[in-house]
Length: 114
Length: 116
Image (cartoon, rainbow over all chains, first blue to last red; front, side):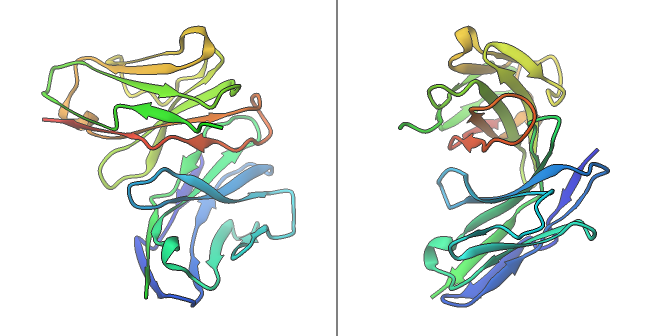
């Protein structure tokens, strides 16, 4: 069974600074997909970024980028130039190539301070 | 384009009562998923529909939970009778593509269920 671990329950960062959220996972699969989802307070969860395991290049979406280390089974999210609107719960998630079920980590609550 | 919607947003019921949650996926999405997050724990998969068929229901906790997707459109999740441990946030998600490969799942806002 796959597991996803987010070791930082809460983090804070000053506006305009950079923050990195950690995620590790465990799987015996060689082909799979990794995701970061964001859930702002009282709002629905949205996809921030995704990474296919077969791609060596790290995914980037504007101020959001990942550091995907396949051998270490690590998938961290870097948020550059943090904005107040980045305040949210961030969930790391995984699914293998055979199915569509997402396996989530416990989440990291990020607070961006002015 | 309307996103995934869920109704109700909150539900408070007594132990032993029945509650039915509804999810309307994005139009044209064949895949519909139910997840839930109980207090302070991970979001856990419950089941997956492809159109009206249950593709994977391995996450359903017990037979008090019944999910349906009539006509392959909206889905309902009924809890009968509700127990205290059923309290949590129930999320619905939908995606377009079939099983395998990868397809972005779009989530609804969730239904917060409180069983007293």
